[in-house]
Image (tube, rainbow, N blue to C red; front, side, top):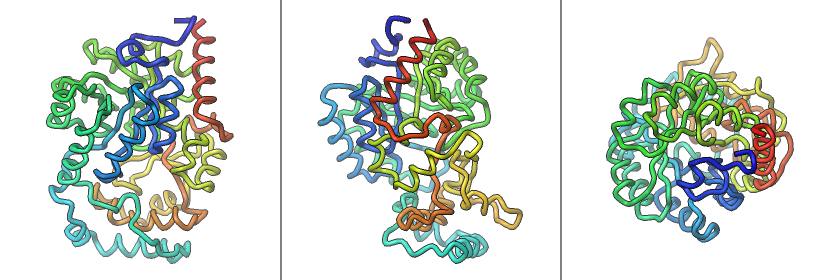
Length: 359
């Protein structure tokens, strides 16, 4: 292990390093894969047509190297992609609160729906997204929230590896019944949707509950020392997202202002909020999260109602670079990333430090 950074997951998945890199950027996903890791494209907010195109673009750029796609599939979503039906149930108080934020920060109207409100997170849309994934030659299908057996079964029937992210050992028994191939133990430190247990408390618990399934460590993994620690706790690799946000390749998905806020942020500059999606989501602290934390603020709505309530204004904030309100999901590891570098540079630093630490 100390001559190179290779574990059992490298042989099983045909990769050089046991580093699975999650990114919403197609270019970053390609670069992670070509740098020796396993790129995983975040496709939850992509239309079926966009998923189809993304899978084809990534495949053309990585050749026969393996890569994956991640979809968030929470239970309890509406059956139909019907925005009018969702809008009709949003309370007036919440509408007024968002309107007051728009007025207070002088947010210009967006020219198109926001990322979260382009469509309703529904079973209808999920079925269409799944069809696009299954028709592609992507190697790994990852379940970000929820792992519906029907989705896992479809992927396995088509010869794809399957993976699920978990934040508590209590989820493992049900997850094992799905026949999943790979488990990601995602701790509290992680960016975006995350749970309540710290990463390095969670990893050994998930390893013990996984009944021999390979486990990846996620949440605050930002250095080679974190990778080494994860391996010592029983993981066979790591799942990293935040590290790629400040790369050149990710500039196709984040504005210059948003990346600058990430570069300036430290671990204490992230906060968990339900203000974006209705579910707990770790993000860079901003006036947006602080407005929703105020005593006078209404409680965020459940997903997908919060998506539709705030989706358009979040899109307008990003489109017009409204400084006080711009923010991005990010994990507590963001403090280690304070300059724009290439994905390959980040990967080599992670790998070299892990090898040195293990030695």
